[in-house]
Every structure is written in C-alpha cells, then in structure tokens.
Image 1 (tube, rainbow, N blue to C red):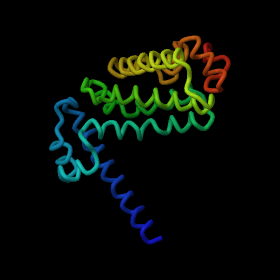
Image 2: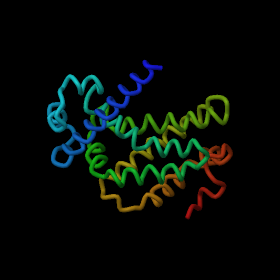
Image 3: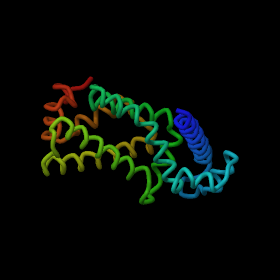
Image 4: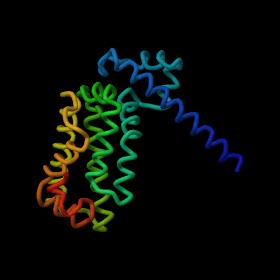
Length: 203
C-alpha cells in the first residue's frame, strides 16, 4: 500500500510538471512560431531544466501532442459513453476554440511529428477501435479506405477552420464534417449506433 501511495504521488508530480511545460510552450506561442521555439525557451519559461523536460517528452512536438491528447480525450470519452460522433466533434471543436492560440500555432507547423499528423493518427485509430468494438472484427478494406480518406479530409478542414479565424461555430463544423462523410461510411456508422438516423440533416 505504501508503495502505491508513493507511485501515486510521483504520478501527480509528473503530471503537474507536464502541465507547467505545456503552459510555458503556450506562452511562447503568443510571440514565436512553433518551429522556432526551443526546448531552452520552454524550460526557462517555467523555471526548470532541459533534463527535466527530456524526462517527460521526446521533443516539443511530443509535448504539443500530449497536451492535445488531454484536450480532446474528454470528447473521445463522451463518444465512448454512447453519445454520437457529432456530439464528440462538437466538444472537440469547443476545446479548440477555447485554446485558439495553442491550436493556431501548433497547426501551422509542417514538421513530420506535427499536431496535424498526430490528430489524424488519433482520430483514425479511435474510429477503427469503435468500429471493431461493434463489429468484433476489422472493417473491410473499402470501409478502411473511406475512413482514412474521411479522417484526412476532416483534419485538413479542421486546420483550415483554425487558421482562417474559426468563422463557423463548433456545431456548424461538426455538422459539416458529419454531412461530408462518404455515404457508405455514414450508413455503417448509423448501423453501428455511432451516428443518428438523421445524420444528414443535423440542426
């Protein structure tokens, strides 16, 4: 029991440090493009060391992706608890709106480890997991092709929404993405209970 308490305390300290590093890079983003922010900038911003940074993250993109995961995990959790893809997307876009400075700068980066690639990997795997959970098998090749194409397009339009001033509401963005889903894919999502029957006519 004592060891468990120690482990829990250590986990809490590590989590607090990760959030401190995230707050620091967010502060840096207000004045500096992501690709020009250094680990030195990040650690100086929160009064820690490079050694501490690398104990928690591989690089600044790993830090950005970790923070992104924290922001969107609630929307994924909601979708996993019986709410629909549309509801999950609305929640995700509200998170992005609340953290517009972070996402505005993070999405500008074209590094191979950038948030855009991470967002694609995350959402694709999430949808695959949900489909496999319902089907008890991997979706067929055509559905996987349509899903990958749809996720690529979704990430592209999400980035465009962020970088052009977020002119649509989160609800509008979620509706646009649901309505843009390929027919065969949306029909399968409806059949599996991941979308409502009227998903093409969301209000």
